[in-house]
Image (cartoon, rainbow, N blue to C red; front, side, top):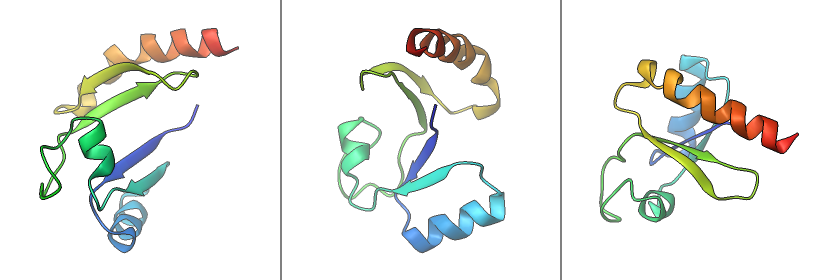
Length: 91
């Protein structure tokens, strides 16, 4: 399983944030808002911010689950069963 974060920030800003926050996963840069538009987390290329969502992409490349991440600390309970299911299906 791989975990990525995505933001509209620059490479340098993401790097600084990841180091400061001691992130255990990679942060991708979507400065052109292409992922945000494709995943429906922003309205247009001028958006300053993306809505916070967690997407679980299965082994086939399809989105298996999308969770509104407005409360990141509370999402683990709904995310864990899906990750366990996908891990079993992938083995």
